[in-house]
Length: 115
Length: 115
Image 1 (tube, rainbow over the protein chains, first blue to last red):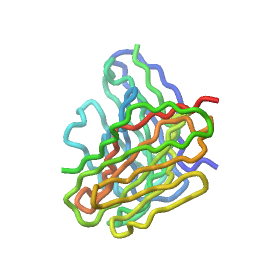
Image 2 (image 1 turned 90 degrees about the horizontal axis):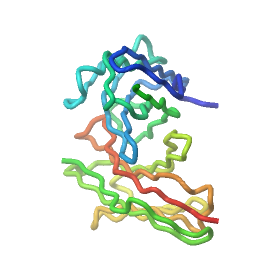
Image 3 (image 1 turned 60 degrees about the horizontal axis):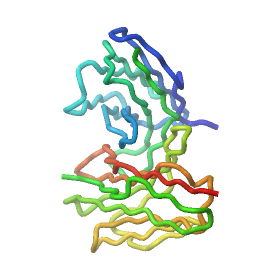
């Protein structure tokens, strides 16, 4: 059974039109991540939550926002998508406090196309 | 600074051949954790193994084996008797205490296994 679920799998949005990607997890893990992965590149961390504490990467554009209303759900909002934002967006969940040796569980990703 | 280098961009082998994927990491932390993930065409990142910096014991799991050598900062992954289903992108990743909850990924190695 899928433990990290991302919806939708494929999203097409218009240039400049706000879009929201969704992620849910059944693991009850306290850490959730959003990564952006462009073609043939490594996943790039955008931000993560430790419980409700939000941590933004320094180079994440202001165009990207996130919400985590509860443990299970996390959303990625792109306020004004540009052509350069077309990518695969990966959500992940990981358990643990300061212990960093637990693996992250990833969803199947949402592939975003901007037209 | 923390960094993961996967020098092999693409590898192509014929089924039943053995193949080794290289991973070299950099960190100043004495406590750190290394991971390998597989990303099949479906997009989801699948966890394969984790290793902590205090455990240099090599590991074998079926056709998979991992060679961790702190002296050379390497964590290489070998697939024995490769199969077509092994075709995927493989990522090596690093977490450390200083890095907190951030997982740093290498650029990935795309493995093609031909029948």
